[in-house]
Length: 384
Image (cartoon, rainbow, N blue to C red; front, top):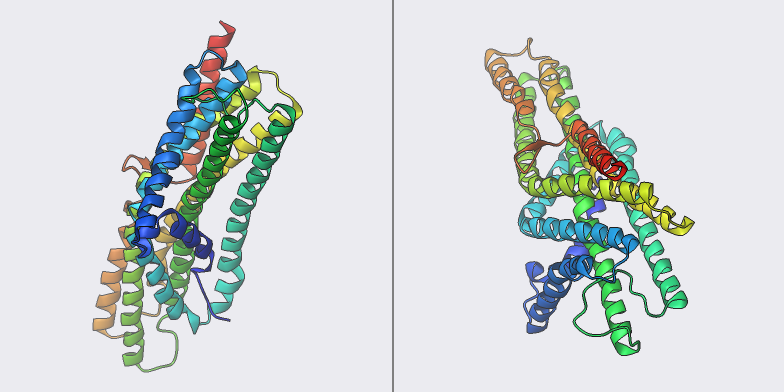
């Protein structure tokens, strides 16, 4: 079986080819027009279109919460999309590094571990995220159909429209179609934003663990010391690839995770407040519960795998020290000591969101606490 760490990225690259075809070599006039319309009408104008709906006098209290939630999530999605598109070249370099690391692991004894553990872990992660988004797509289609059947004069979201769409006919169906297309496109953009970070961190954690296994076993085989030293030099090259991958990943995920952590906390507070203070039917309640779960799902995998990577960094010096270095030559021991000193510094540089927030499980729980604190303030204000 051929190891392929990049297999889970392939759906994401299909989406990127649709969202940013210019980066992949498409330079025709039609492509430029398509990109301008996509980013102007959907990425930029849709949050403004829905956000201005908050100021309309016809907006009810229930629609107010719904518009506020979708506005915040749309702004977050747009900001994360621009931050990620800016780093597409770095993302391609990470994929090349993963292919090189796969070749290093392919013929080793840890191949079975990788196939049975890391690959399954990534499959479960992508399956969970893809399934949640598929469920939300299904819910959106169902809501759209119900709105069309029950109330032919209602939009998906109360929003500002520069013409009178309530007369029905083409004006109504055109703005309804615009909102629905925007929601679908935003969902695909959100998918690329939310899946890439945990997938990459999962790959880093797995390859770092495999590297630790190889280093801990180095020197115990009954082979000439020259061959052992050659293996050590090859492992230095693997370590260089891992460090390059870590550096690129920090640059890519830092702005994306900062926006995500900030807006996820605000979104959770708004959704919880809506569920707690206002009456709603079973369908709307179920949709809000699913939406709250999806918001949590956006941030939890990234924080979890960032914590796993940090743990692997802390274990790496012990793995290097566990090898049979003490029976080797002086030159070999000096290289191992230098290598150990390099790995001791890894844990001093955790993953950061915007250079301000450490990305780990503590951050996830802090975000949930922040949402609860805002919810408690709103509750107190309402009671008073």
